[in-house]
Image (cartoon, one colour):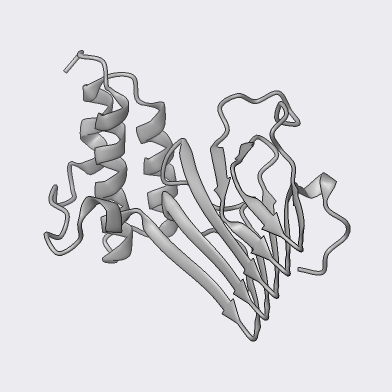
Length: 188
């Protein structure tokens, strides 16, 4: 098992770990530790112990694209999402006549790259990203305020942080994506 692990090998192990978390076989702390080890693995032998005590199959009912998807929506309401949680590889954040505040600083990312689809229609959407994250903005706005920062070098020069791809649109709303130092003081 001295063969070098590929990104696909690491992603497969991450999917098994995510399913184990979802079914209660792993605690969130165990999941975070094993996921970190999976993405730090150099060889296939490094990956084996991470899933040895877990079933190696994902549910057949979930297609590969559905396994990594998640949605958080605030419709005529205010929702704050923070703490230790696992966003999907593709997470849709939606605010419709509401406010959605998402803090990703303690989130456990399911891979090196995640896509946040941000949709704010007559609403406000604020996303706080980790200090070591790099952001690529691919979204738009119509009669809105859209401020996405974090595309520069991460604050601590840490290139190992997640790549967060931001898509989606603001329509008559507000989208703000920034590191904590770039955000005004928010009452979380």
